[in-house]
Picture 1: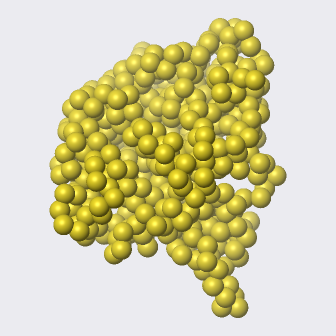
Picture 2 (picture 1 turned 60 degrees about the vertical axis):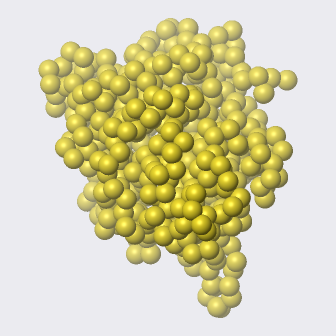
Picture 3 (picture 1 turned 90 degrees about the vertical axis):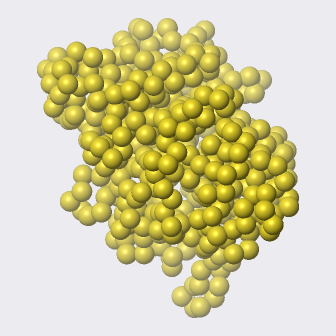
Length: 470
C-alpha cells in the first residue's frame, strides 16, 4: 500500500484520484462534478472507479488481511521491511501505538473510498436510470463501514459529500448508529439490485451479496433472528463446489459457490490489476516457491493442527514447506489458495491471476447454523469435505457444542481468507483462543487506535479509543 497523507479532511472531502495502488480507474471527468454525473453512462464510469477501491481495501497488507487474519491464531508475520514493528504489533497484540503506519493508511483508504461512494449516491439520486448503480454504491459503502465499525468501534459516519469546514465537525458516531446506516444501505441495495444470475458484470454487487452481508451484520450485532431471515433468502440458491481445491482456480473464477468476488486480471489486456497474494504470502526471501516472497500471513501450527485427519481442505490451504535448490527441505508452512505457478514476474512480484472470493455459499451455511443452532447447515459443509457429521459417530469429541463446532469449522473452511479474527470476536471466544494459541496472547486487542494524526488535527471532536489513552 502506498504512503498516503493522514488528515481526516483529505480523506473525507476532496481527494478522488490516486486511490488505487494498482490502477486508478476514476474517469478524468470525475474531477469536475459540474460536468459529470449527468447521465447513466457517467454513473457507470464512476462506479468503475468505486469498484477499483476494492484493490486497496483488500490489498495483502490491507485491514481485512492483517486485522482479519494476522491478528488471529491462524497467521504470523516474518516480513522484515522498514515498518516491521507495525506488522509485529498487530501480529503479537502488543505495542500497537496510535502512530502505527498501517492503521493510518487503512483509515484514509477507507474514507477515500467512502467519499467516492457518497458522491455517486448523492449525484445518482438525480440521474435517470441510475437506481441500480446507486444500489451498488450503497452495498459498497455498507461493506466498508462494516469493516470500520468492527475494527475501530465508533467512527465518523459520513454519508454525503462534505466541504472542508463540514469535515471538521464530524465526531465519531456511536457504533449502533453506524450499524443502523449499514443495515439501511444493505436493505436499499437488496431492494434494487438483481440476483447474481443477472449481475451487471462479473464482480458487481447483487441482491444476493447484500442479503448475505446483512446476515453477517446481524450476527455480529447479536440479532440471530434477523440474520436467519436474510440468510434463508439465499439458502439453496447457490451450491458448494464439489472439489474444494478448485475454488480459487484461475479456470474456475466466479464459480457456482461464489456470491461476491473481487476480480483480478487474466491477461495483460485486462482493465483489472493482477493479484499479489501469492507473492506476498509465500515464505520470506524463499527464491524458490516464488521469485522472492514477502513472508506475510504465514501459517501457524494452530491452523495446521486444526485440520482433522483426512480433511482435504488442509492441503488445499497449506503447504508444509518447500525444497531449496540444493534439495534441502525447509519446514515452513504457507498458504497455497492463491497459488499461480505460471504467473509472470515483475520486479520479484508474481502477477497472479486468481480472484478473491469475499462471500461464498459455505459462509451462508455456517452462518445459518450460527443463527439457528441447527447443525444441518454446518454438516453440508462437512459433507463436501467427506468428514463425519456433527452429532454422528466419528465427529471430534472436543467440539462438543455448536459454538465450538462453528469455531472449528470456520477455521478450517475459511483458513487464511481474512475471516478468523472477525469470527472469533463474533462467537465470543477470541480471548480464550488467543490465550491458548501458539502466540500466547494474554490480552487481545479488539479495537484499533484512531490514527494519532486524525486526533491531533481536531482533538476537541475526535476522541481516542480508551485502550490507547494514557
